[in-house]
Amino acid sequence: MCPSVHAALGALALALALPTPAAADESVIGGKPAPLSHSPWAVALASHERFGAQRSGQFCGGVLVGHSTVVTAAHCLSKEVLGVPWRQVRDLKIVVGRDNLAAGGGQELKPAKIWVNPRYNSWTNDGDMAVLTLDKPLPNRPIPIAGRSDSAYRPGNAATVYGWGDTTGGGSYASHLRAAHVNVLPDAVCARAYPGSADGKYRARSMLCAGEPTGGRDACQGDSGGPLVVGGRLVGLVSWGTGCGQAGSPGVYTRASALLPAVAAHGAD
Ligand code: ARG
Image 1 (cartoon, protein in one colour):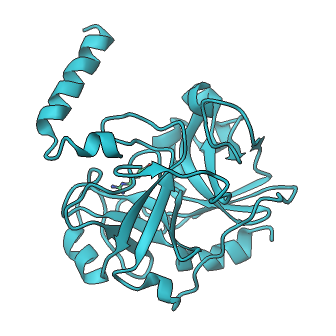
Image 2 (image 1 turned 90 degrees about the vertical axis):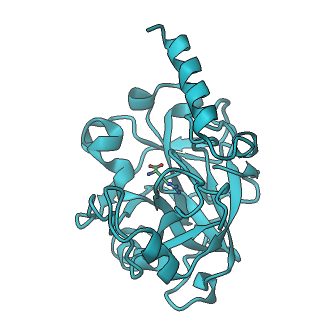
């Protein structure tokens, strides 16, 4: 079948299947543009070799947590995402300060060192974290990681998730950074939503979940590794979920406090 027909049928099927078609033009899902000047710690991971030159080759998000340290999701550096082991991706770059991935600006930096959590569990998604370091410190403002007992993790808190990922759940990737407002949910709600399935299993110690009771606002494919922020502190990294923006299936994040030992051991700041 010709790809455009395929795409049109896909769009039609999607339009028929989507419970709330209005979510499609809102859109991250249900978000709005987020100028990088306000979120200079939001970075993109990219490879032209693996993902083409369009949108700078972006495939995941990341977060500047020190002037020389970036955190992301372990699964972003998996063979499932990259097609090959990450060591074989010769042009893996951290894109900093580039609002519009379809244009220039900012910098593309080669990580000096990469640590991928060897204990990342691709079945439960537990331990979904990686630390990338730069050999020269950036002037860009990093974001502090909320400590374990920080009030930022309190259920009901208003949080913001940032990314260049899918804005509809149908494969329309953003060129400009976007952000959506979601609420931090109680662990009991997350555990009930994700008791264990092919998508993963919720574990409160190392994960956090956030969303809206009616869905509509969420992270989606391509946002992984990117920041979830409360009150100017990092509380999570986009990790997984069932679908995107569906009621009853909140987004699951790597709990940022779980990153602290890894950042201390493998970061460069
Ligand atoms: N695994 C996805 C990625 O690699 C992120 C999925 C997040 N999903 C969600 N519903 N919040 O980009």
